[in-house]
Image (cartoon, rainbow, N blue to C red; front, side, top):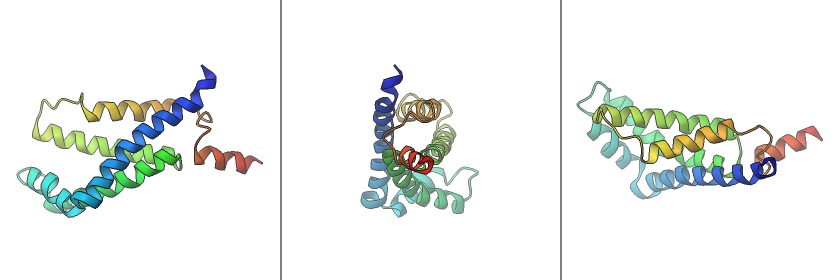
Length: 142
């Protein structure tokens, strides 16, 4: 089993990274951050307690966080920080969905991504051989 950790980490990291990278890519380059903010945040939560300025900041910034964090996760650079960032995104989006729908079903995209994040954060340190983080660590030790 131990010999499989590097390839398992690589596969899980790339699947999770691609999910966020492609979502961010679509929101930044196809939908646009302005449309994302307006459609999914301002219009969706204008009747909530959340101030419009905060909705706009979240709506504009989330696509870029998804894009950059997804890329970082794929290549395995600053992986822990990128995983924490997308974990916080999941908290924000889960709260938003639950605010709109108190019985929000977490089984879809949210739970799958959460499981992959948790797996990567709990996997043994040093076993992600196919990452820039590991390459930099090995280089530093030599």
